[in-house]
Length: 96
Image (cartoon, rainbow, N blue to C red; front, side):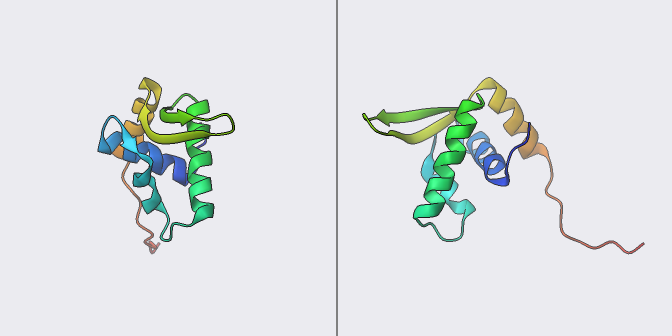
């Protein structure tokens, strides 16, 4: 399954922070939080929900769905554990 860096970050943060994570925890992915980055985060959360990796909690109006916090499904928990377990690679240049 192909996931973007933001989606991997979201899964890792939900796995680390606990059962229900507020969406404000994902704004640290971007240095500046503006309207465009909030839209991108929302789109990524919605796509992870469609893939069956997250469960979204919030409220729904006639026009829009407001996701306030998310939690992992068993499939998402397995993938989040694999992402959190994987060590980050440093951008070091090796001499051969």
